[in-house]
Length: 558
Image 1 (cartoon, rainbow, N blue to C red):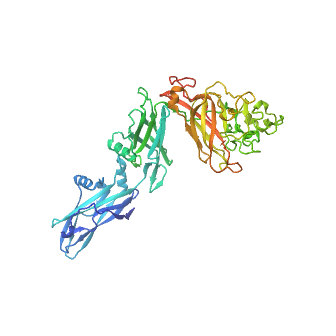
Image 2: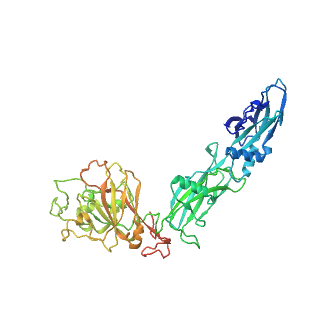
Image 3: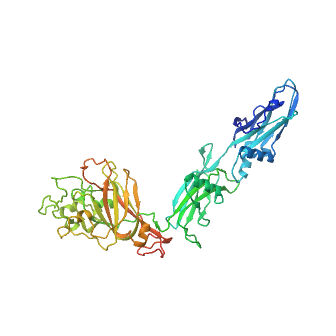
């Protein structure tokens, strides 16, 4: 198929600055002219217009730039054009003659886009634009030039992953997936054939690193060789995506543990053969942060052995909607709600459920699960499995609603997560402090047993260590907080069996039906993650160092 090609002036400045007015003949349009071509076109026609300004008889000769002239042109105008292969174009004539009465003539230029594309596929480096630069000179010694730039539209693979990817190396081996798609005329198209590309680390480009650090206000160094490896980027025929994997190793076989610090790894895709589609050669920068000591598991701990042992402000005394066991049932439609209403001016209320005392301040002080009587009906069979036999639950308004979970065994806690109830418009916890105790049992002495009233709020008979503070917003997302693990590494501070949640502040608004002068806490679900590695070695539960073998998390996951 042959057609006239659309042209546009690309860069008027990139031309001969000599004034051609004194010459007999010149091009009708000088400078750079962009030719819009499609790789499936068999040929495209261009008219090269030549103007005779002198209106006298004469002739002019055309010639294509030499490679030396092309190099000089690129250097002068900061371009990177390539000379069009000789079999990709046909110039009707290399000279034009005028009579005195002729002011303009046209020379036909035929370009073969499909041949250009074939040549382009043989280039395994960057696909810079091809051009056909013509120069002319007349018998007066004047000259002119025009550069036809082939803007060829063709299928091209482009990396679609973010150009900058931040990775915290919290495991011995971390894998990053890079995705790519093939575009044609701005649209994603399926792979016509199976596609295979390689990747390489561009760690030999000191200027790139300098520019990257300057732009980001950083002082990264290149990730050292040996701590990364690549798969190929592959896409099956008919698929619209290609994908490859970058593997990051903190301690490759036979090498030292990667030093603490922040690094950057620039990656370029590479074509392997002429059968592959062309590439858009964009650099993907993987920014790697390698902390020194402790690394967390990406999995949540299985909570099937968890039990509630204490709650000092439990709506479960009054109704089943806000019962504390709901935080472990895997369902954010159910939830725990602290006590949120006043009665008769009392600051803390207790329902003895027929034991002789009506509403009173610290009447029986607490009840255990075994003593529930009628309250036991509030707990479904599903909820009861999350209660310890000596579960202590109290109805009362608290400055800081608090509950304690027995996780069934010691964990080296690295992160604690919380999720709001699904009814997000209602009252929710904004901030909460998390504490861990490694005592062998939960301790609580009621007032009836001689304990102080402070026990009901502070819940501080165990040896508690603060590990983190959770801060949330009004969404149903999971909110995670990381424990202070570097400090805990030597003290074991975040190791323990019992976890204490202390609600500090409710989210503003959304407290319909609640007395907003009261402190409130509510939780949909509570989660924990544990330490996976210490100093580059898998952490074995129950050990104080990372010298053992194992996965670092021998729990199952939800």
